Length: 257
Ligand code: NDP
Image 1 (spheres, rainbow, N blue to C red):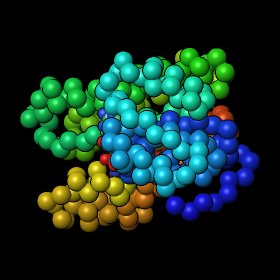
Image 2 (cartoon, protein in one colour; image 1 turned 30 degrees about the vertical axis):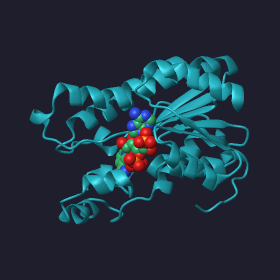
Image 3 (cartoon, rainbow, N blue to C red; image 1 turned 90 degrees about the vertical axis):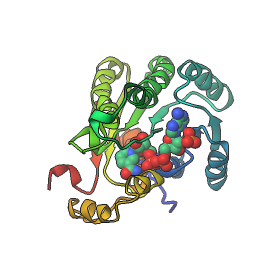
Image 4 (tube, protein in one colour; image 1 turned 135 degrees about the vertical axis):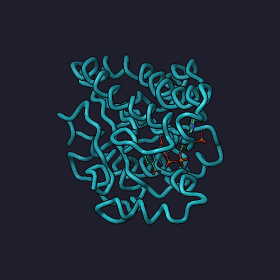
């Protein structure tokens, strides 16, 4: 990743950013962008090797935490450990995610539940764990990585859509409660971004890529870094009056082209 300098208002210097799913794809790019903006980044996920490789690429001001977001009760201990070892978490990025493609009527309750546990309950557990410290310090920000599936209908992803749509409401609710204490809560709704997840979603359907590009005004897939830079903005003082929003970063796909 390029390492542009971030003057003043976009600087994350002094921040400690906890990024779930930080070892791969979009999470890794968010970590890279926030690191370039001066933050210490803590990359969390289940696979230690991916996390270690991503952190090693960044060097100083990068550490890892093996953490499964579905282990809801483990969230407070994770946040306490980071606070002890690195400093208070000033920015939480709820990015960890899974996807599943199945017609709505074939999606079982356990499959639905797994999707809600990872996205909705997992992010809520971590947000609850960081919020008291942020409220005490009267500053901090929480970001949720939603999806364009939060904004318009896509066939075959009912449980994913339910989970990601929940983020749109959650950031509004959290904002009403936390923002009076100086804590901002926002979401990013990425369009199609080149990662392992989007490649898997297109497996066995070679025409799908062209269809997606045809429905995107900018006529291309996004890069993980496109989400990274948006995350830097939302976590930075430049967005100090921005809370409760879901920002589409999708090359115009959500316009309904
Ligand atoms: P990846 O599959 O590369 O990233 C998913 C990340 O989530 C992995 O690092 C994975 O790490 C982590 N993860 C999954 N389950 C858990 C868990 N239970 N506990 C901790 N970490 C977990 O895909 P992307 O980078 O594309 O996805 C990142 C986010 O962006 C997801 O929330 C996705 O829904 C969202 N998104 C992606 C889009 C795209 O086009 N790519 C579009 C819109 C939204 P590990 O397996 O090591 O735990």
